[in-house]
Image (cartoon, rainbow, N blue to C red; front, side, top):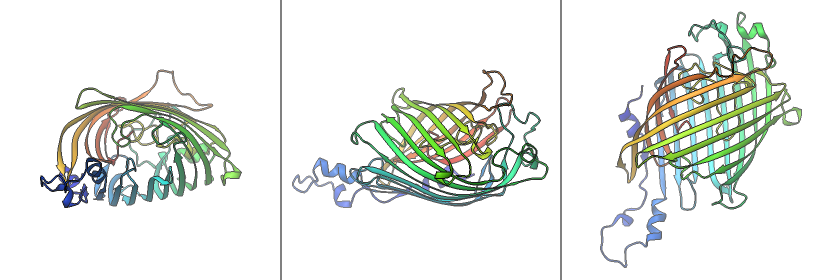
Length: 400
C-alpha cells in the first residue's frame, strides 16, 4: 500500500502568492491591501500525481497511474478548474481509464461537468437480485459462478447552476449520459442461469435532471450544513437506450461540528428504479455523486462490491471525522485526521424474497484522511459483522 510519506510528497502545489505578497516590509505604501491579499491567497494550483501500485479488496492489486489538479482563482469556489485522468489495471482483470473535468462558473454562472470513461472487467460481480441473494457464497470472489465479463465505454456531460444567485442554496442541473455495456456471461454462472433483462447488453442513454438545496460551508471538506437532493433519470429509445426505464434518487447529507476538531457526518440515500431495468443498472444510484452497491467503497464498506442488488436500494453512512493536527505545505495547511464509521444498506427487488424489514447489512471500520484545500486522500479499513471478512480501500475525496 502507498505510504503516508508518498501521499504527502505528492500533494504538490504552486505557491499561493508571488514572493512580493509575502514580503515582511513595514512600508504601508508597498503592502498589499487586505482585498488584494485575500485574492492572491485564492490563486494557485494543487496537483496530485500517484502511481497506482496498491491493493484494494474489491479490485485486487492495482497498477497504473492517476493525476489530478485543482486550479484556484478569485470568484471561483471551490476552484476554477478540476481535472483528473486515470489509467488503471488490476490483478483481477479490471481496467478503468477516464478523463474528468469540472468547471465551476465556467459558462457564466453555470458549472460544467464532463467525463469520458472506459471500464473492462473480466470478473464483474453478479450475485443475483434481492436482499438475501447467493446464500451459498463463501467469500471467494474469483468464482466464475458469481461473475461475468463486462466492457463499458461511457460518457456524460452535466450543467449545474444557481437560478436564484450564487449565494442561494438552491441548485439545479440537467445532463445526459451514455454507456454501451458488453455482457459476456460464463457458461456456468448465476447470470447464465437467471438470464435477466439486460443479458444482451447494449446502449443505455439517460437524460438526468435534479435539484439540490446546499448549505454546506465547504463542498470538498464540510464541517457544518448539509445538502438535500432529488434526482431523476430517464432512459428510452428517444435517449439512445435499448431499455425503457426510469429512476428517482433521494439523498440527504448533513454535517455537524462537535468542537474544534470533531465533525459528525451523515448520509441517507434511497434510490428506486422502474420499468424494463437491465440487471447491470440494479447496483447504480443517480444524483450528482452516484454510488455503486450495496457493498463496496461507495455504499457499505466491508461488504464485497455489489454484493446486493435490486430495483430499490437504501443505505446509511455515519462518520465521526477527527482533525488530529495540521502543518503548512507550500503555504497552505495540510490537515491530518481520522474517521470512524458505520454503514448500513439493503435492497428490495420484485418477485424475490428480500427478508424481513429489519434485515440491513452493516459495515464498520476506521480510516485516515489527508486534506489540502480541495484535495482529500482517504484510506479506510472496514469489516462486515455478518461475514467477519474485512477490506481496505484507498481513494480520493470523502465518501460523501
